[in-house]
Each structure stands twice: as C-alpha cells, then as structure tokens.
Length: 280
Image (tube, rainbow, N blue to C red):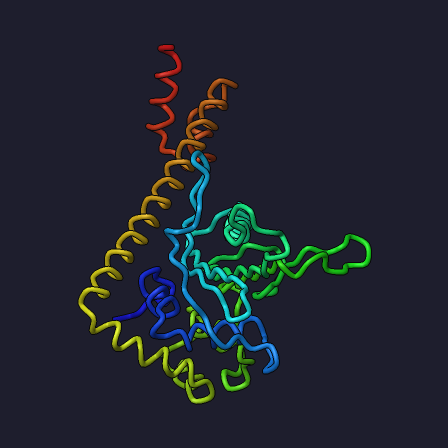
C-alpha cells in the first residue's frame, strides 16, 4: 500500500510503542540536535488518559507523551489539517503537560523541562524555515528566562533538499515523513541512518498486521471525509459570496447580463435572484 506516514494510527504505532523506544529516542535526539553528552538514553511512555483535566475545561488530546531519563517530558504531535490558531493549541497542550508534573503539595522546583514537537503538514509561519524552535526570552537581551519551555514546529511542506546523501541527521527524519521524499530516497537515507532502516522494516510488519491495517484504513477514510467536507464547505461559501454580490449589484440597478458576466453566475441564476428580490 502507499503508506501515509502521518496517519495517526501508523505514527503512534511507529514512535509511541515501548517495543520501538529506540526509534523514538533516535528521533528525539536527532530532531533536538543532542550531542553525545546530552543524549536521551531512556524513555517511558505515559498513559495519556491519566493526564488531569479541569471539570469544565478543554481536555487535551495528545498524540505521544513520554518521560525521558533526565525527567523531562515530551509531547510529539502530528497535525495534518491546517489550523490558524495552532500555536495557541500547541501552547495549551504544552501547559497541560507542564502542570501535570506538580501534584498538590509539591514544590515548583520539581518542575522539569517540557518539550513540544509538532509535525505540521501545512505552512504555519510566514518565514521559509521548515524547522523552528521557541523559548521564553528577554525582550531586550534575548536571554532565556527558563529552559523549561521548548517548542519545535516542523513544517513539512517547506522541506526541500537537493542531495539526499548530504542531509543532516535531523533532516533525515524530516525527509522520512515528508511527501517530497520518494521511497527510493528513503532507502538511500536508510543506508546512513540505521533508525530509518528500522522504520522502513517496521512498515512491512505494520502492513501485515490486519488489526492495525484496519485501524489505519479507518483513519484514512476519516481524513478523506474531512477533506471532502472542507472542500464542499469552501465551494458553498464561495457560491454564497457570489450570490450576495449579485444581490448587491441588482439593488444598485445593474443589468443582470452584466452581473452574470462578472460573477460567474448564469444569467438564469441572476434573473431568479432578481425575481426573488422583486417579490420581497
């Protein structure tokens, strides 16, 4: 099958399973550009259902949540559909995870760094960089207030490469998830990054698992249905805008023939609108 690596079911199965924690550690160390001295060496996936929620507040729906060997928490999110307010959503998810660390009666000094990694299949920021990182900084000297907040946004649509063999290690993972990369190019990447080779091997096992395959296909159908609904809504909104414009021009006394040519509505549609207006 033509695998959608951003499919929620596949993504969580690949990087959210304790049996493949070495892949998740490799992904994190590469994306976060960790040197050998600061490598994450172990990871424990958290039960997302255990995250507390306000009784009347919005519940976080996190993709992959884990605690690393130094106590840091990490949340890895995949977002396919464009959201204008995604930065606020990402910050909300980060804040819930950060607050999760501190049960009643504990001290603020116990709070650990919380990292948010967001893989976006759309352009979110106006700049051309496909990987941006964010911290809380002083407005004047740009010094970091605290390392506790670290947020990464990877905009896959912006990712381009000229030589697959010269990619940095972080970029090999971005290429793996990018639609710009072919299966042949992923095979070349796998020759230099064993973790990518392991990910490709897992793809075959995933496709042979009937249960996971069924869940994957249901998720793909949900994505197609969502896209179809959004396309229909956009077309309807555009059509309603044309009707509204035509009505304004009819009220100004402009001839239906002229309105039809300028609005892409048929002459009969404009005449029907004119008839309806005359009856009101």
